[in-house]
Image (tube, rainbow over all chains, first blue to last red):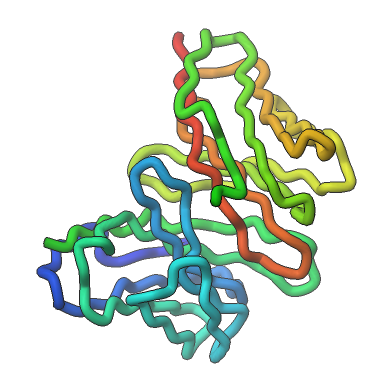
Length: 115
Length: 112
């Protein structure tokens, strides 16, 4: 049981490049989400999904796309990277049906630098 | 407009003593409040939660207190241990949603 895995661990991009951050979980969780963490700030929700085929925007969605074709995978795409997207990105998953709150399990993070 | 504030960026406590981490919020509609702990180079891990209809929840060495009238919650760790050294985030949410708003975090250092 690997939990939540994220690849890559580190990435450097040039402004304007695109890339996909990978996230996978093997706990059969229906809820998955992406956060970014910047210095002096808490985690901010980018996008989330309540199940395969269903995604929605979080607090800071601009410049990012997501899709959820399977329960296990929830990739985050940067369309045209900008220096403002330099951050640490965390993927998380949890159960969500019929429970009042969800304890999220986080991956180890991807540290992205955009030059 | 910060809905969730953790006004102490850092806190140092001697091993064996009590650690008190604070969190203030502005939205009276929050229905659940979660605390997460984060070690360097790792993702956050869930620690403890409290419902808005309660004023206290305890789990071993960790107790969370909620004061709804003051819109304030606190996490007490007794006794503190060096392994508790980490960044702690409070993260409340509103009813009917799983969208959490994370505070900026408090870095706790427990001195041996």
